[in-house]
Image (cartoon, rainbow, N blue to C red):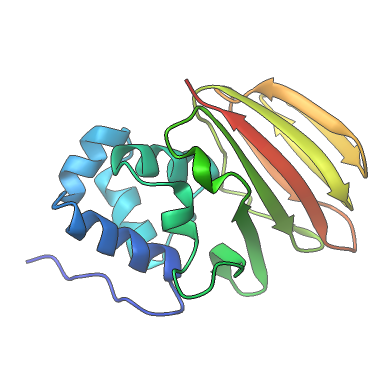
Length: 183
């Protein structure tokens, strides 16, 4: 018998995902089929043991027919900043900027990356296109084999179907506006 993921404030995304999935009466196996994400990866997200990249949140929200905001934000605090995954001091924080766009293809997020941090094993890859605007700090974005270094007010547009990753090499927090188009 599979053990149920623990629901707590330490794992708000996993908790909300379990609640939404149960409310919609969708098994984790069915959600895996609907999203193309492995059951193991979904279980780890629900348990708070794996990072949920924005592309995965979009796939999951589309499969559950909810806004990404429903997964990322608490109903109790509309302005809270959600930590996608936290391991020691590392945390990428996402804030949905287009909550009303749950049935649309274009979504925007404010992404905050702590100083000198990266998720070395996390690579994003999702269908569509991505546009990144650096509001504050600096970011290194690796798209395929090519590295891009962006500073404040610089942008990058790329095919998000190519594996990509983010890193904040600076000594200050980085804040990005990331806009995703998913067909």
